[in-house]
Image (cartoon, rainbow, N blue to C red; front, top):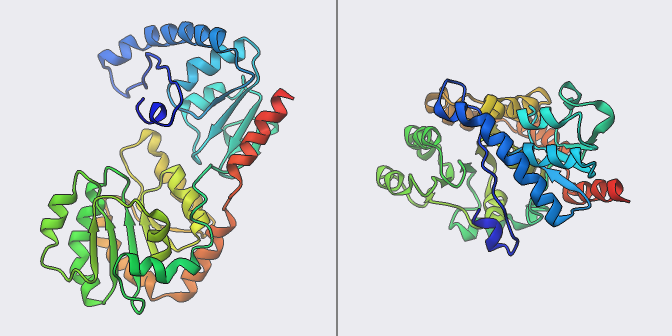
Amino acid sequence: MTKVPEAGFPIEGLWISGIQRRLTLDNLSFPFKVISSIFKSFGILKRFRPDAVVGVGGYASGPLLYAATAKKIPSLIQEQNSYAGLTNKWLANRVNKICVAHKRMDRFFPLQKIVFTGNPVRKDILDLDKERDKALAHFDLSTDKKTILLIGGSLGARSLNESMINGLHQLVKCDVQLIWQTGQFYFEEMERRSAGFDTSLIKVLPFLKEMDLAYAAADLVVSRAGALSISELCLVKKPVIFVPSPNVAEDHQTKNAMALVEDEAALMISDIEAKDDLIPKALELLEDQPQQKVLSENIGKLAKPEAANEIALEIKKMIA
């Protein structure tokens, strides 16, 4: 509700939220929220008079896409994850097209509606190999040492940060460099707890503005398994260890990561195992060049650099 207006676009909110998996007051109010949001959606459509409507699976997509399909407005949904969310599954039989980012999505959606487009991501992460020296210089790192990049999202991830703290002595012992994005919330604590370690090896940062350079500097990436993170990493074509967040709806990050593990395109460690196993597994992978090559090649095969254009093309086809 702040980022969209900042980008110069109008936005309208709906009184809607997800269903809690336990009895709560929010659940009791859910039917009223749905009815209210559907009525408001009809009003938005009447005022805006769109040629097409696109939903990306959030709670607000449900009422708006329901209203749009009731009015026979061409409609498309984009499913970012490898495991379809409730909203998109509910809308699947109503919309015209379903753009997906993973294979085998006919488990959830009608096959004839599916288009494999991938997820739209930034374009500045293509052809990173030629940026490696510049990237290492940017982070004041050596060109002669291997580098791990850890990204836990803009807010950070407690378990990933604890895993790093627990394994810093192993990284230093093995002379491995680390670009460590802690998240703003955890930054001061992690900076304090890592203060005794060699700052020429360990770079502790609250967030990474220059993600292209962070990716370029890395020999190995450790990441959560959100849909857009995975789509970016497919373009980056670096070996990845995913540590899925357990605190998401329907455990979809684990399902996202497993989709790549099954294609030998990434490794995965569960959140509960990360504190003890993440750094040993990362160091093992850094020494295994053949496995790095397999992972890099296979994750690169999943890249869809023209996803945004392909989705736009499907929208244009609907309204032609």
